[in-house]
Image (cartoon, rainbow, N blue to C red; front, side):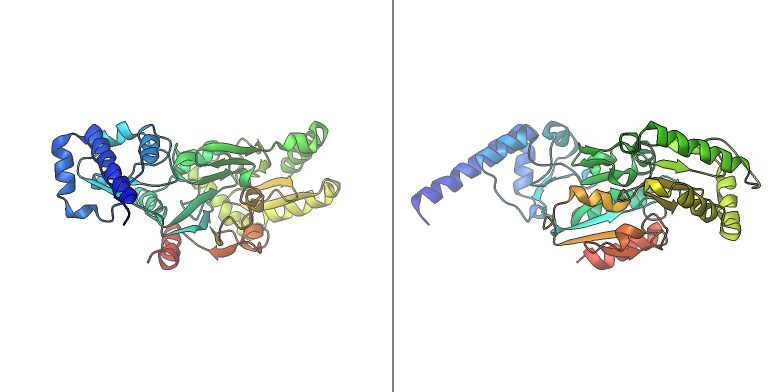
Length: 339
């Protein structure tokens, strides 16, 4: 070892001790160095310490175990982290940073239109230690936040709502596409008028409010109405399986608006989405460069033809996985990604 490299390592050690002293205090630093649980441990350069301290480089997590985990690609509020921890400082690199796992929401991470359970939420945080993780939902961002959590755009590496027409990466908005800019207001009005007339002539057991929901990149159409109760939602789903209310309406719309080159995607329990061709869930892949990851996996429950997961499930760039519940999602991910 050369003299300069020895000097550099000593300098690194001094910076390490000073950094920890500022963050934790002398007694806790002594405890830290006497603790055998800090392995694996690596030293950081002066520049890395500076970036770390000002929250530009690394991140804090795992407060339950009272530890700081340094991720080399995230952001950190170190002062907040220091208040929550006292004993361990260790590095944690993702096991497979070249693998991206994308997840549908309803039926995959949560029950239909329900919030993610604490157990599933903890599992996804654990999964993020192994692979890069993203959410791809058909619903708008507000509903994604209701189900996955208010901080979904920050806690997940990617957050794609409305199939990726509203796209976030590492907490930053990277794309937003509007359906009215693409179709024009006259065509939007024509679709709305046709839908309302059609639904007025459909006889189903229950009708509530919000039959058409205008979203950033699509129209969501619900024959029963999105204001229905949980019991009414479940009842319509079973009724639709027998009477094909949604498939019949989709077939009629395809014929009426053939000239607009629209895609119709049945998802969830009570509705279907209408959007321009190519604006299905594969749209989110526009924000993921070729070669950025060695593998892209997608997990969804509506992977059958006509389902809103079908296009990305069958995309050549993606390894598709059909799931039937959050528990099955956990099972498949554990088998695939956990050593």
